[in-house]
Length: 266
Image 1 (spheres, rainbow, N blue to C red):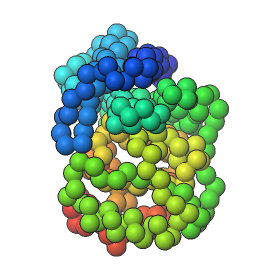
Image 2: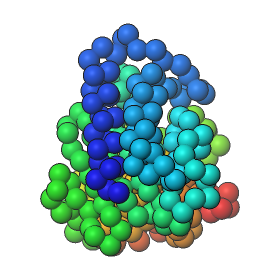
Image 3: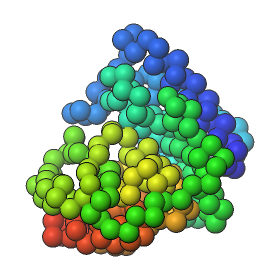
């Protein structure tokens, strides 16, 4: 199943790379305020879905642009979670920080993950219980053991500002307690970078399953920890995620707590 997902991701990546050569000619529309989708998103998603369903016609699909319209019903034993182009805004501005993200749930548990960075030709993969890899080389989360000195990834609110005050409080505290915060603009790649030890931790509010499913499995298989703001495993449903190397994760989760509202714990 992992090999099928890799082929699907590379197929989508080829579409994205071709589209990046002439961005100004792409058809783009706004789904919501500050939330864009291009014809490349749709083409890449359809290529992924076609590849997966040709191999596994009885599997369910949850995709960013087409929802659950393809494949078997959502209660199927297997469900693929797809983001064909995580970081569309970066892509549309010519910023080479975006990725294809594909994950597989088996009976509700993450079992396979692929994140493909087409601009760098970097392929991140993981299978439950078999470790995480970057271009077939085993990767591990960083060995850093203190929040101070750590590099933390995040994502600024850009569409829903319901929790903006809580986020600004988190940001203010962490700027003073870490080596720095980074917001590259693709949650999938941010999580992959945590798995590869390039960043020591990550947190964000209000993400979707397709943003984080593959990256969370990568981190777990690379020896890291992932939770929601309550320290539980409800992140795929809540969209609130905290991740990192084990010791940094614990300190990051603690540092965020003063700003976690009851709504963010749900």
